[in-house]
Length: 331
Image (cartoon, rainbow, N blue to C red; front, side, top):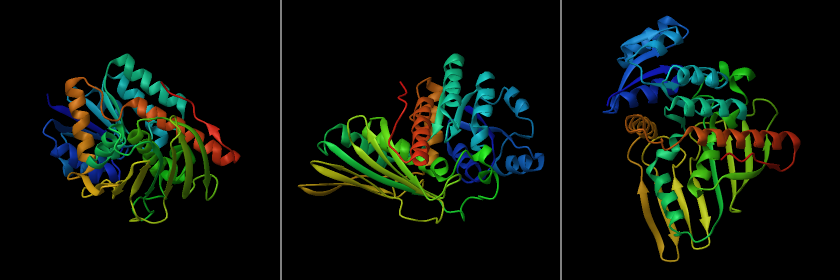
């Protein structure tokens, strides 16, 4: 099966990562793209070889050559665009966050279940070889009992245009936690295979924060510090997980680029467990196309996106109230 993709939201990630990943995937083809600006849509379609470029989302959803939709629109439009695509019977990959609140995220997941189509959240870091190897090593007990993790995500304002929809609270929903930090929220739960159940947090300012720092307790008692910022690009994209028998060090682990490495440090010394050789977005697109073709769940499901939204809600509440907050558990 060849999966015909449609893209709504032709911003930077769609341009430099998603569309090229679709072109590179043997199971995928770019069927259509949509933007409010028909000139931009046509230029994007011409650049990336899409069969159609349009300014009417409903028109794109009626296109029978579009099997799956990548939603890269502003955060505040994810729910509207996802629900429309699911109602049209399309498979949907939503860039993180899945939605701005738990209610909308639940509605998206329920709509996908009702339509019996695949739904995925754009947590591309799950697709890195280092993340998969770390999850396997932790599950196999190679670290002993895991007790602490730390990771940070940064993307400077020189990389993304923050004077556009990111400056509108109704479209952004917040600041760096929703733009970058949810990757760390999802990754720590993915690596340890345990949900986050309790959080505390601080931000540099209220509203659209530039710096976010949170502390999390996972269901098994593991503690984690996560952070994100939008003040400087190119900062250290590493993460670490500590256990009683050893610790994992992923150099470059929160970058979407290949070349990151995972080392295990234990009483026997240091051993290299994995090196990522492909871009995370390429693996994300390939995984979702394979899920559509096979009918299986993608590596980052809609429910994973819903869980991350629940944690993000709790983190913002903890920062605003200056106290520990319990996270709504999502089954």
